[in-house]
Amino acid sequence: MSIVANNQRFSGTFFRKYVAAFALLFLILFNCLFTQNFISWVTFSNLSVQASKVVLLGLGMTLIIATGGIDISVGSAMGLGATISAIFLANGAPAGIIISLLVVAAFGAFSGVLVSKFSILPLVSTLALMYIFRGLAQGLSGHGTVTYNSPGLTTFFITPLFGHIPIHFVIILIAAAIMYLVVNRMKFGFQVEAYGNNPTAARICGINTTKIIIICYTVSGIFAWASGMLDMIMVSSADPSTVGLDMEVNAIAAAVIGGTPITGGSPNVIGTVCGAILLQLITMMCNMNNVPYSTALIIKACIIVLALFFHGFRKK
Image (cartoon, rainbow, N blue to C red; front, side, top):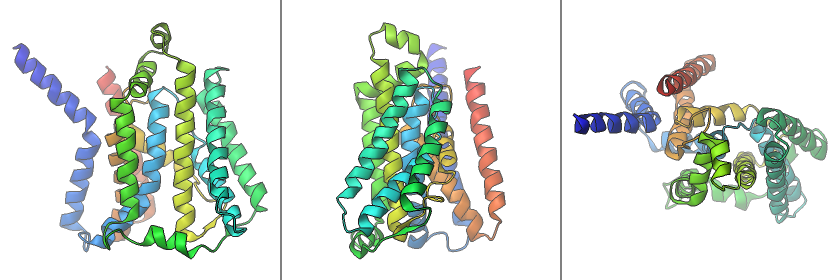
């Protein structure tokens, strides 16, 4: 009886951990059967380009949610990083891209300080930063789109590796692999999970919880910067009012659908990647079948509600 119970428990845990992957596989098979011209390299390339930004944001958000927090400033952080980088590129100073990275990462660390040192609710602190990011981006750009000319940079990101593999797909693989190793094979990942499960117990066990929180929010900022760079490079410009707009919703949805509990603990990197790709695949599926975008939003909302319901049911 114990062997059967253990097998059932293992099967249930395995399904819960990879439910986003199963849902993604089902949706891919569905489109292969019912969506015309879905099976093509163009579809794969477009999906990689569209999903890469959400994947990067989702990976950073996974760490934040695993600590029991939330970061609604990542979309605006995309806009600030892209705007600063575009300004430097427009003035012939590509090295300034590093400055944009440092600025966004510093703000991320500052958000972590507000949450960990001053016990400000993550929602409140990141809400303030969201307005600061967007305001700074618009002020630095003069409330207009910043356009630059860097054909070499754009060509690099739109040219497939070996003539077939989209560079954005490679970026997804590298980012996911690094985050998987950090979360599942390093002490830092176990400390994040411990804090998310029980912050008080984590402090008693000697974990530097302040350091953990600051690192998580800094990493989230870095991923937001990288996502903003991908957005900027593809169009050779940055509009501070639209870059990253509402992207925090997709990032949160990807992490939640991927299996990271909204209450904290157990970050699921593979699930987040599958959740991000699933969200973009829904949009692409609707476009390819001439279904209104509003329908895609409704489908995404239903999936998010089901994911939250599933988390609540599992907790009970």
